[in-house]
Image (cartoon, rainbow, N blue to C red; front, top):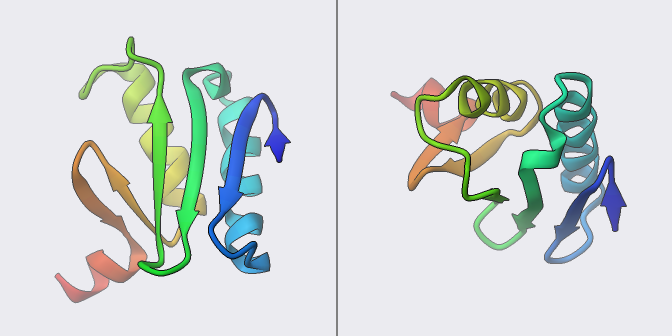
Length: 93
């Protein structure tokens, strides 16, 4: 499935995961950074989303921070530059 130019998928096609991915894609599009995201995949087994970003996205850049903010505001748990992020992780910490 594609939303706002981003390929989105859920391992088992879970409704709640697809909604989060759609919300992320919409937020990224509204922030004019969706074209930096190639794919967003929700692994239903690990309950974690991963993103394939354009190679020009660099950790700490304005684009990266905008994308991370979009993810943080829409996705429950995700891997970002090899670090687990999200509501479930931060509440435990």
